[in-house]
Length: 203
Image 1 (tube, rainbow, N blue to C red):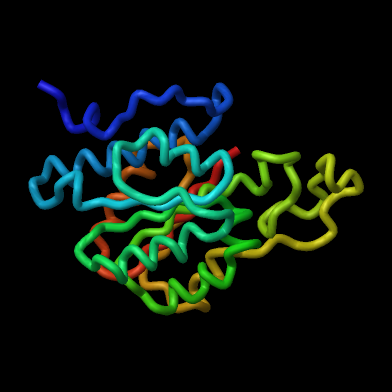
Image 2 (image 1 turned 90 degrees about the horizontal axis):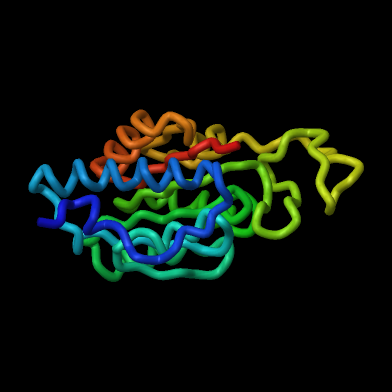
């Protein structure tokens, strides 16, 4: 008999680099969903996911859930659209720090303001890792990359302060390496009635 975790998995080859914290985030998400589905209060078809472009967004291929692979920085807006179209769905929008805090920052702010019942999960590794590692809004001052060999000149954005200023009703930050804690936070975020923002710090 197939268990819930196996039902949530796909047959696609995982192409993240060995040791990437995205493996840990995928495991945390699966643990959270297994707990919710096995509680009997949720079913697998009750969930929909959105992603955009980037290493983080490959999670779309590895979760057996309905959803939309969107444009860069538009995962949150797409998730909001799904929620408005079908309020019964539990929508989870996965997005990287570049997509959330650079290209899609207006969607991030206003979706938190609207407080629709959905979950935003930001994979924050402080860089555009899929391309040449350009700095994002959360990169540390002095961070050097191929695109900025002299180092990032600006102080990093604080997403938690931004979320507080946007009147978010659920804000959490966790570390990808702590799979158990991250799974607990994601589960609480999904149960929360309102817009939940979870920032997961990765190497």
